[in-house]
Image 1 (cartoon, one colour):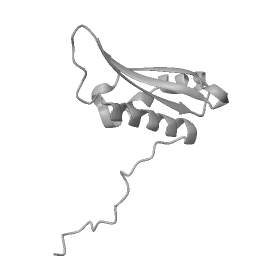
Image 2 (cartoon, rainbow, N blue to C red):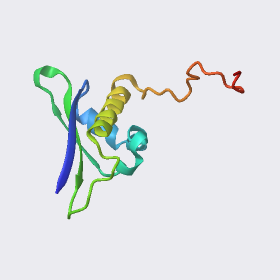
Image 3 (tube, rainbow, N blue to C red):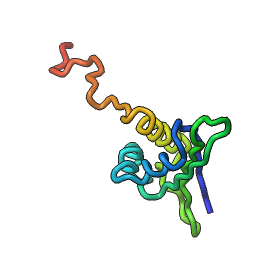
Image 4 (cartoon, helix red, strand yellow):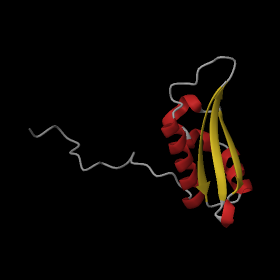
Length: 110
């Protein structure tokens, strides 16, 4: 069995984290950067020490000799946790999709 997991503290109760993770469309939004992992991730939340919210673990597991999808990397799981954290703590997932990046949208002037 192959398993990959990452942990992050989120400023919310464990129940609130699990409820948000299980809400319609949330996993799809949180894993938008890694669609092959959608439905494969397991999320567990426990109270964090010192009343700091919840310690949240996201893991992906391959069983029966199967390989993890190539999208399953530590960085991908950590990014998903950060996206979930932002969604829970601020109500939105930060994006640059609508940012013009200060690039000229017309033909290249050079």
